Image (tube, rainbow, N blue to C red):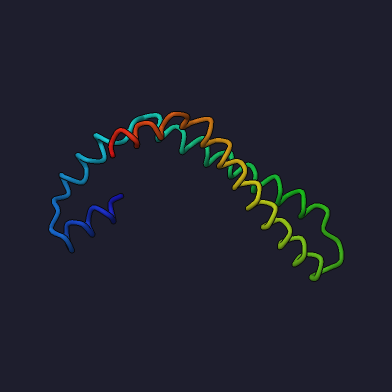
Length: 102
């Protein structure tokens, strides 16, 4: 956020105070809490999948490469699914607020 505020000030001449005031008015505590929960879930998915594939790796360097590729793909799919599910749970009805703005 600091880099965005400095960029807005330096390039566009928008005061940093305006940026900070807008952020303070638009962000709620739940936005920060939900982002932290989602980050923890994503980290858990990555670590569990990576450890599971790493422990079962066999076949030397070739096996490590294959396990790494599989772990990355499965982690990404898991993160996409978890992000969708958590967003549905956390932000139910948030679209209604967007409709009112239009």
